[in-house]
Length: 187
Image (cartoon, rainbow, N blue to C red; front, side, top):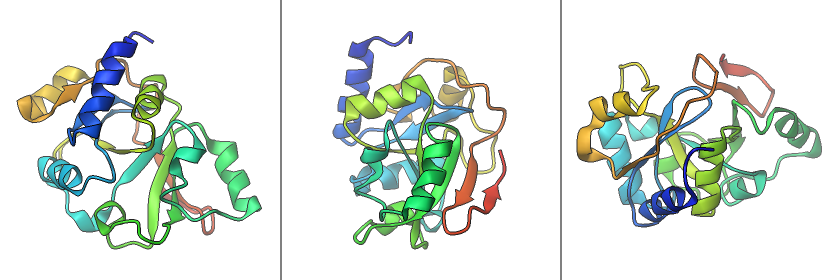
């Protein structure tokens, strides 16, 4: 991992202070913020020109970081998660009571993933929990795959950009529904 611990801790502090951070993920650069901070989430949505009703993805370094946001699945469904994580599979899981609409949109589920990307996971660990993860691009444009592309899209409107290589996935992560395992967005 080429990022210093100091850089990751600065980015985590930025998240705690309500900032928006860009970072590499399994396929593209992501934009993240503290999912508990409504102002930060609304600012991120405005940067992307993404409507709130669509909902957002949360990433974590480990399953336990997702527990404040999801209802515990049955043992058989939990096995599906364990077989795909850490990795580039995002699951729609019933949201825990009280999960705000600004995260889940108009859905009763929330999209979550335990990331396999070492920098994204290290950022979650430094932050101490799950973070919002949405592709670093304005709506309708291709996702950024480099820090330069992130800066071209957002200039100085981001609070931090973590430099690093994205993973080898060519497409955004697959999305599956935990209710039946159905693939909603192939990878």
